[in-house]
Amino acid sequence: MAKTAMITGASSGLGAEYARQLSAMGADLVMVARDREALDDLAAALRTRHGVGVEVLAADLLEPRQREKVERRLTDPGRPIEMLVNNAGFGLPLAFERNDIEDEVRHLDLHVEVPMRLSHAALGPMLARGHGRILNVASVAGFTPRSTYGACKGWLISFSRWANAAYAGRGVTMTAVCPGFTHTNFHERAGLPPGKEGVPDWMWLDARTVVAASLRDAARGKAVSVPSAKYKLLVTASRLAPARLVARAAATGR
Image 1 (cartoon, rainbow, N blue to C red):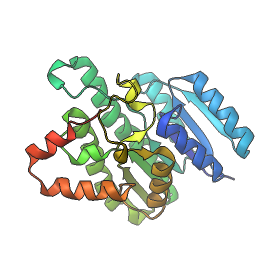
Image 2 (image 1 turned 30 degrees about the vertical axis):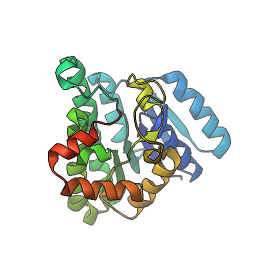
Image 3 (image 1 turned 135 degrees about the vertical axis):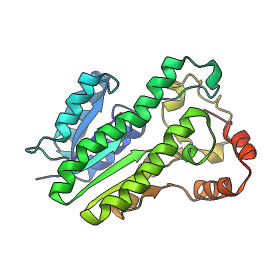
């Protein structure tokens, strides 16, 4: 029986790319997002192309009852989940003082509370079986002072590092995936028109490359995946530079 991967935020962007690449490897999928129509369209295409099983689970992860439905699916003993990809998220403008505080709370919940809850639900069955993988889509922003987005992603990186050390010996790995600027619809959804991010062309990554590199790193049991040599260098430089300089540089783009 093909092993099953659950992907949140699977209707577009990196989530859809994870669905495409994992299904091409023969994995069955459970795809989670709010947009049922987009999920159904992608699921139909993947079933036809790769002959895998694809389950659609339409849910708003910020709604407790809907999120609990996803948690129950993760703990279903008759339909085990071998891999969880915590990818759902959204961006906000960097000017924290001008943002609506309720938007900031939802942002924090989706980037921190939701992956924590889903990881907790997935871990029990994975540890009982002695194998499993969890990928938390973070960002290189998690290594830099970058408003609340960087703070949320920094939490994911720290949590993933700890959990990987704690559970890898029992067969379950956790990897924080830390891409830089990646061509998806994330920036458009955050309110920036295409081409207005102020980011040089050389800094952009391709979603296919990011996902492929992160899956390789997860298979190797790495706690942190930075899927690009240039961003690995930038992360190293950010650790050595003064915080004020790093924060100024990190203010570029969305």
